[in-house]
Image: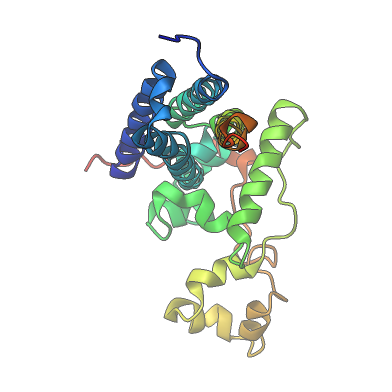
Length: 209
Length: 70
């Protein structure tokens, strides 16, 4: 349990104790002190616990384990451990180019003003599809992968700006930055999760630290 | 001594029970790392807590609390 979760659990338990006291002895609210206690126990603490809970759930929904906890995502999680550098997500995961505990979220959120909010809305839609609808097989992105998500980290990096493949054509870099030349579908970095190839793949076994 | 709870006391008791139920839902979903937990927390826990707070606020503005007319 992380520090934040411990504090949240403490707030919830403390709220429950205060509220239980009021439930058992509601007559104490007749006094001035009792009214103040009721205000804190029935409004301030629950609102605080609720707000902290929303924050905690949203933070946790960014974790790789959270994404992999749905059956339909298992193969995508496995693809992060393919022992082949041509698999772009696997390379990012295994070489720590993205934080491993937030690997999915780092590449699959929109780096826009409401990107976080939109990705959570899409998540609710996925839960609906999981239980009440039918997830598409294979899973597809809503729209072609936007270079913006790659450039969030790679823009300005020497490996990106000075790469021979990127500078051979003088127009290429600017077209990439404008999302006119797609990184993942233009034939350069097109091996992504490729879950159909997993049965023949070998996997990286992480050494214990 | 009058042991009958007043209307405001009954509402505070109901608000408390709803809030405790909502907080327990929150506590359980914190231990469960799955998208369904998020949904349970948001829909069930959120609803119970909102109802609890609503009942408490209603008890504050209920007619019984108004000062007697002179």
